[in-house]
Amino acid sequence: MATAIRSRRCTGGWICGGTSDLPVTQGQIVRRIVKPVVFVAALLPLAVLVQDGFSDGLGANPVETVTHRTGLTALVLLLATLTVTPARDLTGLGALATLRRPLGLFAFFYASLHFLTYVVDQTYLSGLGLSPVAVWEDIRKRPYITLGFSGFVLLIPLAVTSTKGWIKRLGALRWRRLHRLVYAAGALAVLHFLWLVKADVRLPLMFGAVLGVLLLYRVGGGRRAPRRDGRLRP
Amino acid sequence: MLIRRPDDIPASEITDECVYESRREFLAQAGLLAAVAAGASLLPGRVWAAGARAGGQIDKLTPLKDVISYNNFYEFGTGKDDPEKHAGSLKTRPWTVAVEGEVTRPRSFDIDELWRMYPPEERVYRLRCVEAWSMVIPWLGFPLRDLLNAVEPTSQAKFVEFTTLYDPAQMPGQRRDILPWPYVEGLRLDEAMHPLAILALGLYGKALPNQNGAPVRLVVPWKYGFKNIKSIVRIRLVREQPRATWNAVAPREYGFYANVNPTVDHPRWSQARERRIGELRKRDTLMFNGYGDQVASLYRGMDLRRDF
Image (cartoon, rainbow over all chains, first blue to last red; front, side, top):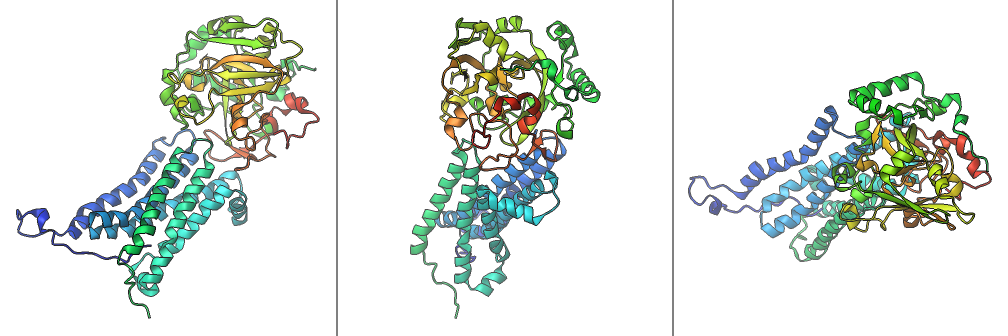
């Protein structure tokens, strides 16, 4: 997905307007303020979930609530991940790019919780043992589960290769190509959501629209952006 | 047509003592004891836990707080918690139910008149939602057939069509075309005349909360929950099969009959098991929701895979 980390250092002196002796770079602002806020925001859904779990706040159908909340959070964070690059381009705050990896990993984390909840529901809570075969059968049999599962599987290599070491190992160009899979994962997640609702398709369609806009931005903008410098690969 | 008498319910279907006791306990806790005592004359005291132990599984009453906070009532929003939040805008007095169509004596019933004419009895029924969750609810209701008999269906009457109130001012969910409003449901006449089919006026010893379909709703315990149409304003006896809302919206997913059937899956999910609200582990879904002894004869000779 997108470029390797590219921190465009600006002088940022304009931000502190000379009241201080030390100029603060936008990189520092992102690191010290934006990043912590994003981390807290990304962990908040989990904190609320745990708190509700201990205070009888998950409603009449707790398994359903956990499934829905983790899935919804994963989707929101996935879209937030995809928003980072356009946001960086539009604001010119190069340091924002450093948010992409943690956001993507948080999305993967919630998707894992979502999948785990589903597996426990299908096995232990259905009176069946932990039978991978039964889970696999269910994944195959129910199309919206097939879609959701496919999206989750696509995220696994992206999470694994999210480190700087992997960027180096793969080379920026190949790494970037691999990480375009995130759009496929997003599309699968939206279809998964769309297919499971009974009649009220407003929310999944909204997510689909956001994903579409982000994808269009990349398709259109990716070409003109000078990003194909593509880091040396023999 | 053979209509089974209520007394045909086998002994195994009678509430067992621990369930009965827990019901008392609950009512006491909820501070409803006084209300129930006051209304005792209204309640002939017959409790049908039609299946305190159906299929070898024990049924306990679903806590009132869950019964009134986890609802599908799209007229007030599509979230499970929307009806509790938004149903306050529904005005249930005055309220009339028109009973008309292929009948000799069409007439309207005022809701208070219904309470007087058909003093409700308590019926503990399992409710199985098509979404694979279920509850056990002590309804206050009376047999639908009592009302139908009062208007004398003609020989032309083959089906019964029910219609929910249409008033977007009171029912905010109707301001969006999530479903074609108003909500309509239907039964074959013999299903409607079955003694287990009731019109419910209350639950847990009190009048229905708005989110549960006040002031009067259908309860047909052997069918999926969506058949149990809420806030009814019209009951029409008709010749043709009514255009039931979910059936019309997605005929492959929601049949007209919608009998609870663990062997016929919803196209998108299994119906073999269900989660009883209040329990984590799912349990097996029973054919006709465990009421097969009473209702299976209605469907003799029918292919329930085709007419699901």
